[in-house]
Image 1 (cartoon, rainbow, N blue to C red):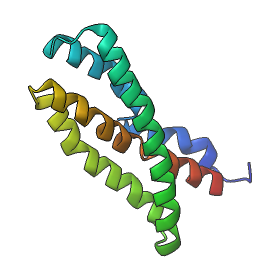
Image 2: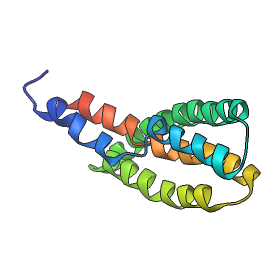
Image 3: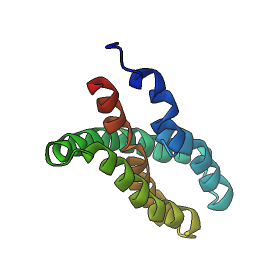
Amino acid sequence: MTGSRAPARAPYGSPTRGGGSSRRSPEASDLFIRVHGVDAASVGLLVGGGAALGGRLGVTLGGVLADRWRRRYANGRLRVGMLAAAASLPLAVALLSTRNVVWAFALNLPTTALAAMWVGPAASTVRAA
């Protein structure tokens, strides 16, 4: 692009953190079907809808927050990625350990949103490079 190596190396950075909404959805579907006994159609609607909405919210909020924090701190974008990783962990543990199916579905959306928050900052970092 501009002679920088950052765009070429971007695929090896943020995506290797994992936890993106598209990677987590198949496991979440299995969890709801096998552990909670929910039928596949309901799981597809609720988990798929939660992944779509959570992914959209997470990427957008992550990008907006990263831009704001970047104005204040030189490492503002990095802070958003670290915040997203740290904040999604307790929600993911709660999602996987609860026996209440309503709580599990309720935790799916914020967990997915936080897991997708690194995408906006990663894209803006590559674009700015």
